[in-house]
Image (cartoon, rainbow, N blue to C red):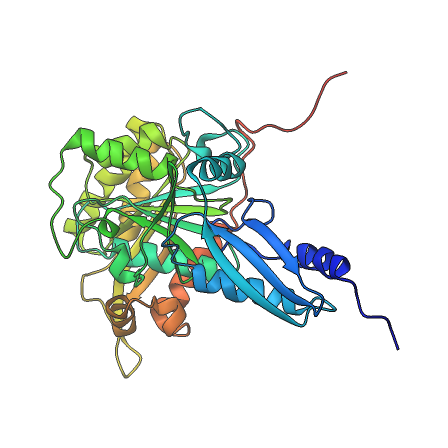
Length: 381
């Protein structure tokens, strides 16, 4: 018969087990963040753990309690566990911010502009509204996350925000000191002005306020270590398109159009802005390309060739290859998924639109990286 573990050995085991528990929002071990305030073990093996929440109304308190309880129950000699939740002091919250961001006293910066950043940044643009740009963006984000990538989606369409609806984002951002933690939907970290607006109230802002909002979302939001950041831009070539060029110069432009000539001509202008902002157009996506009929034929509701025409024209105008990356057919399932808040790539992954969007997402996620501006870690003796 093996001896009963002592209280101290059980306590040491608990502390070790808690290293595997991540904060659900910050995605760092709670032990590293200073959230474990006390661990006590009585003679019978009952464990009391006091965990400090970053804010009193933390939306993930139940998840954190469950994860801590599960971790402690794996420890030999722990006969039971009680989790007590407290709240951090302002000083402790500031320490968390410093640990997460690695800076102290400095103004927030945009991490995606760091030369060492490996995050791919795609700004999804269109010349006019109604071409399905936001639906394409939401599905690309969900498809990439489903493939195991760490994905963020910034809804930069301040006046016409729709991402919260398309992804069924019900949670609110959490503020820790001066750091904003975005809610997660379908594995995607999402930020939108729609999370701060009550009901369906319109946002009537002019240029400087739009620029400041985009700057705040890019710098003060804790996005974590992302593989891909997608921006859903407003249609046209206005203030936000210019601000993206200034604030996120490494962002690559993805142009969405429909086959219709009237839409493709306007979409070309949206891509041509890249010449002024010195950004790269990664390619063109043609949405609503055709409708598949029951007999297998394709009905080209909006005509044909618009996407290729935009790609060809932009290639000539920008003196670089701008390919047509994909054609997404009209699909009732795509619309239904948007209305329900579950992207079609998740709800009906084998539908025609989902297959096209998943192929596009994988292409964008696995494009070769350039080395321009990156630190190579090479020193000369």
